[in-house]
Amino acid sequence: MSTTASASIVPNDAAAHYMSARRVGEWFLAAIVFLGAFVIIEPAPYELALVFLTIGWVIVGLRVDRYLLPLLLLLVLYVVGGLIGLTMVESFGDPIVYLGTTALLAASAILFAAIIAVDPGRRFQVIINAYVIGAVAASIVGILGFFVGSEFFTLYGRARGTFQDPNVFGPFLVLPFSYLIYSIFTAQARRPLLNAAAAFVILIALFLTFSRAAWGMTAFVVPLVAFIAFVNHRNGTERARLIIYATVGTVLGAMAIAVVLSLPGTSDLFAERAQLVQTYDGGAYGRFERQSQGFLLIFDKPLGVGPFQFAEIFGGDEHNMWLKGFTVYGWIGGFAYIALVVWTLIISVPLLFKRRPWHPIIICAFSAYLGHLIVHNVIDNDHWRHLFLIYGVLWGGYVAERRCEKPTRPAEGVVPEAQTFRAAIPRAFAS
Image 1: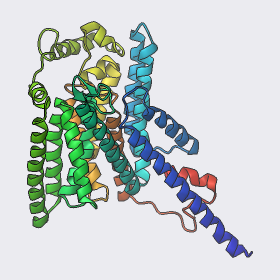
Image 2 (image 1 turned 30 degrees about the vertical axis):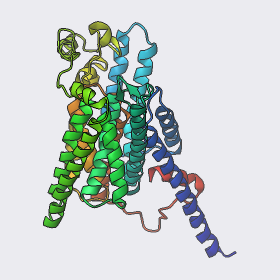
Image 3 (image 1 turned 135 degrees about the vertical axis):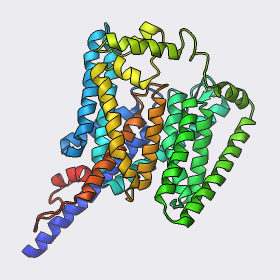
């Protein structure tokens, strides 16, 4: 065999190994996102898969782009604040597990952002497809569990699907629902009927959670997504179509909810849950009173009080993410999280008006993120897996945009693909 022929075979073999490893990595990424829809027990399979993905990434060569350093630094401070807060507790068993979960989820945000940033075109789509499939699967389980009367898939008569709490299940569904609606309204869905069916299933499940937070998020996020789409579409025909689709979709959605309300048991529960203030919200020992007392407490406890201690003191959880940032993670963690929120908003807003292939995902993720920030005031969601995924999506989109603005060129004569299988593996994840 000639030298020329030999030289041509090695790169081709390396490229084949590279593509195989890349596909394996993306399938594993999809599996992890899909498992995010199944957290009925803790630790969930999602955490176990994250551990394997993190270890695998470190082995093959973790590369954190310099644009991710603010995310990394602030999440590290957040976790460190929680570790310092551990000094305030007497028993370390459950609190250590709690903070271990926090650290793992914080690492997942960095990991998702790093994975996305290198190949956003493919990996954004892998993530959103897996998320939608997981949401549909969880929704089907939740709907069947509600109407069958399964206590395993319901809580207090409300659908919780494959989650521990309806108040987590409902918000989890908001992002995939808004993405499906966006794809239909903007005529970007390859299979509009299939997308419409998936959106319908998710909408029914979302309603059956009877989660006021989820309902409020949906009422906020979907119109915001439609508004951003309207602003970005300058063509009059496209804007008219968007208005028509939005009107028809709203009418059909309202009709579907009306049908569900006509079923036995749903109307009474809806009337109960539709009240803005529940019995456990007001009163001397209600949620809002605990929160007001808790905000006074943080001035006396700069190191925090540690996980689960707030409930021991006040007889109930914080149900406020801003408050919990200080009670569990101390002043260090509380201010670090506020800084993370502000920084995320600053880097995300410009992405809404950058016409990239992954533009729809950014719009829906940002809108869902704003919805989560609003419900931060009435619920503590520091262990919501999908929230950290949203952080990864937004920061991954930010890094991808910076790379698009400043493209790098390989040096002349340098072969961009891996030359050996050993070198191909890290490129499947990090290049």
